[in-house]
Each structure stands twice: as C-alpha cells, then as structure tokens.
Length: 558
Image (cartoon, rainbow, N blue to C red; front, side, top):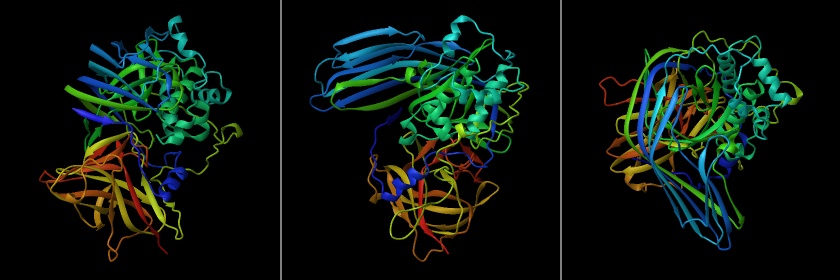
C-alpha cells in the first residue's frame, strides 16, 4: 500500500528562497527530448482511500465543500470502472445536497452551519482502469464538424477563454495548412511543451488563467491545462480540464538500448481531454502523456477549466487549513506494451504516446516577440539550468531542484544507484550537496558522488562528499527532509563549465527514499538515470521520467 500526506512545511535558508524566486518560470533549453511511441494495453485494479481533513480555529463558521465522486467512464482510449463507493463525513454535515452537474460530474455540496474545529471527509472505492495504446487512425477533418452535445466544451470561461485574440492568434498560426484534427491537436501539444514551462511552485498558482500562463511562459499543471483548452476551444475543438488522482508504481518501457521507467506520484492531478468525433475523448497530460493516459490515473471530474473541475471549499468567517491523504492498495497491475519508436520532437522531456498514423506537425511558429505576447519574465530559466548567486556578504553558487510539493518517493539505496544530471555555466567549487531523504531503516552509511558526463550518462568519478552514518539521522523526517553532505576542505571539488552528475551511494542495510519531482520539469529529458548494482554488469542504461530533488552549494571560482 502507498501512503502520502500532502501538507508539509519546510524551513529554508534565505538564499534558497531567493533562488526559488529567481528561477520560477521555466523554459526548456536546447536539450533534446523524445516522444516514446508505444502500443499495447495497461490494466490496473486498486482500492483507493481518500481523506480530506479541514482544521479551523475557534470562531470559524459556515464551512462549504464541493466533493466529487468517481464514476465509471468508457470513452476513447481509456476507461475506468468504479465499484463499492463508501462515503463518510465526520461530523455529519448540516446539509448534504448530492448533484449531477451540467458536465455529468457526480458529487455532493456539503455544509456545516456551526462552529466545528475538525471536519473529515473519507471516500473508499475500488477502481479498475484500462488504457489502450493501440495506433490512433483518426481522420476527423479540421475544422471539426460537431454534434450539439459537445458544443458545451467550446464555451469561454475566465480561466480558459475561447475568444481571446492573443490566444486565438497562437491557434491560427499552429493550425495553418493542417486539415486533420489530430494534426492540429498534436501541434498544440508540441508547441506548449516546447514553449511553456511547468512548475508547481506557489508563484505558479497565483494566476492560472490561460493568458497569464502564456505571457509568463509557464504555470502549474492547472494553468498549462487551461492554456491548452483555451487554444483548442478557440479553434472550434471541444476540450476540457480533467481532475483526478494518481498512484505510484513504475511502468517500464524497454527500448532497443535502454529501459525507460514512467512513474506518477500519489497525488491529485489535472490534465486535458480533447474530443474526436471518430473515437471520442483523448488526453494530454502536461507531465508527459499525449492522447493516451496511463492506467495509474483515476478520474474524478471534468469541466471547461480547472476551477470547474476542482473540489472547492470556503468558510464564511475565520481561517481553515485543508489536509489531504491518499492511500492505494494495488490489487493488480498488468502492463502489456511494446516500444515502437522514438519521435523526433524536441521537447526537453519524455512523453509517452500511442502511435499516430502520418502525423503532420505545425510548420509556422507564432511570433512571441509581438508586444501583446512579450513575457514580463524575460531571461528566466529552470531552477537547475544555471547557477544562481546567493545572498550574503560573499557571493555564492547555488544550483537546485527544490520543489518537493508533488513528489515521488524513490527507494534510492540497496540495489539501485540514482544519478541526476546538472550543468554549470561558470567555474565553481562545490562545498556541499543537499538531498531530501526519508530514512526507513539502519544500519549503514550514505554519501554523494560527482561524475563527469559522457554521451548523456555518468562517466568518471571526480570526487565525493563526506559519508554520513545512517544511525545519526532520525527516521521519517517529513517536515524537513533535507540532509547536508559536506565536501572536505582538502577535496578537489572544482568544476569547469559543463555537464555533470550527482549520485547517492550507500553501504550496509540502510534504506532511504529520495524525493523526486514528477515529469522532466527541470533541465532536459533523460537527465535522471539509475544502475542496478545487483547485476554482474551494472550500466547507467535505465532512464526515468522524473527529476531528483537536490541542492548544490559552493563558490564561484576565479
């Protein structure tokens, strides 16, 4: 069973906060990323336990919560069957109004009209999820010919307008000389992944409107999904934002020379669904799924933008906090897919997709230099794309991927050795490496090694940090999981401009999990690898679709 708690608080040094603010909105650099075209099926069966807990202070009154119930769905390439739905509300609400909204979502509007300190909402259900990754042979024409029921997903909303002149300019440019819907939809996916950065930092959540995401060249998954819907609706293609939850379990895809592992966190998530008249709804997930959706996702609701699809809550008076917990008991998980080919798309991240026949990509780039499209954050980059100066009397070097708000917990000791690639633009001397680790058992030691890069893989070991005895580290330090690995003062830890790797090493029987960010949100694709040291011939030929969290601290060299 997998267990996750969403709410955490972390204390960081001043220079860490400055680094986050300087490096929020991310545009992928020149790193080459590929689409993995696969064909086959995935079938998963789980029991889900979902808990929402609202805590409030004395005097808080009139709590309202809109809760969605999962429902059985069969459409397009993906379906789910929900059974044995159990609901528990403690204390029981003053009023429960169950509903089916205009988009077909099922749920309840819950109200408590008295002062309550703690409210807990529990859902338990069984889900059977089926994903089809067989070739897509859609010949639906563009412009799309629609029937009346789908026109509801063309409407304009505040977060995903269909009538914005600037956004419509992007759509018109991308769809120029394309005459199949699938070519237009794929072109929108490609353009967004090439030009719009993905982050879950708090700043991304400040404005999730499509126009804000476009102008800032970045947003969280809700904002990016709103932008995709806005572009598609402006072209007359029905599109909606879906909301659901995912569970963590590796999906291996074996290529000709390496194994690529796709994994999702135990979290809530948002993605896009697009309607095709000849085969139904297909998906786009900003974290790396085109047309197909992995069977590790359970859908809860959908709507014309992320606000319509999300669970919302409020209080009339006072302050409250929301805590969410997701536990999954995976009964079965069958992955029967085969790798077909790599695409030639330059995305900066790994994407999985069913094969599509005779795809025609867009031929003209929108002019982002237009005054109305100029970004107010010119020159920003991924947190781990370039070094950041730190605050203090002495200028320092700081490189990091610190966003652990939507993390995966990766078992990073024992048989697997994980490595994360990073790049420095100036000569630096590394003085410390910090990793967010959760200890589950002793005995042993852990340390970090730094390697050169050769052909996109770790190569020659340059130096290592001090080793840390696992017994001095407390178990389950979730509130502040960062562990510092100092570099010895006599160690030659200077790095010239170039690309390098950090790897967590261990000895003994200690077990540590290393936090990672979902999707290739930092740097480029194939920048996180592992080798299996239990094999006679250990190679760095395993790629994962997430980025390990880390901090590298040092000084700029002369």
